[in-house]
Length: 294
Ligand code: BEZ
Ligand code: FE
Image 1 (cartoon, protein in one colour):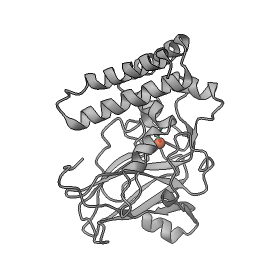
Image 2 (cartoon, helix red, strand yellow):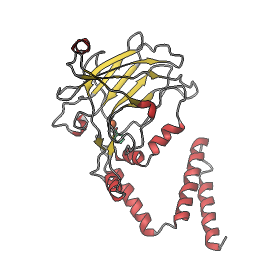
Image 3 (cartoon, helix red, strand yellow):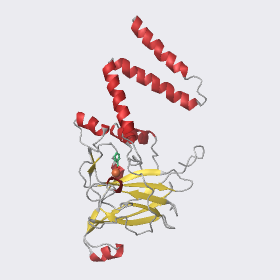
Image 4 (tube, helix red, strand yellow):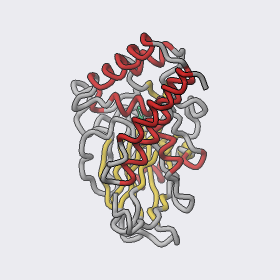
């Protein structure tokens, strides 16, 4: 090791040691690892002053782009695959796979009754979503809450188009019945680009990455005594399933949105034929009493 490397290594150790007094052991462990990995990155890349200045400018712009309806920090974590990696390392093999929350769960979903429509506009392809929430043993979770949100048939969430879409369009908070069943009416969501008019968009553009996400419906299922599950249903025939801009697709979450051209079935669901039907069961795992409910 030459003397420059020795000095750099001593610097890393000094910074790590500066956190030794952190009151919480996990906080100390995380901070030490952040310092070691960040210092190793600078060494490996021999990062120049100009490159570090650009990185700081970019992070500053990411922070400044956030407001009440926009979460650019989450978006950055998503396009770097960090949100999906956090999901992967916290996966529950016995339960339904989780995936990223995304930045559009910004407003409380309107409380709706089972069978209600979350589509307040009525111009897209009618769609019915049904499913059942169970525990790890397959027993129904009666009264589970099922919070869903999605973009419209043009690929926009209500919060992106406050002048065009009524607030709450594409959103609903449902309570599963005694058998854990839920159902709602909607329109088939469209693939859409994540927001590209900010610093994360500039990052994608500079890397010639496309910004599209495959069509999906977000879902959070929760019930006392169970781990809250945040996931998506992906539309099986959607483009971009193999190149999601935020790396969130998991095979078990790709669901057939079957085309049904049967007026009787349509009438039973309160829609017009032809319509699409997705059936998606949710298996929750028991909460870890040590960690408390999320
Ligand atoms: C979404 O699906 O709403 C989303 C997820 C990650 C980044 C952008 C949007
Ligand atoms: Fe989404």
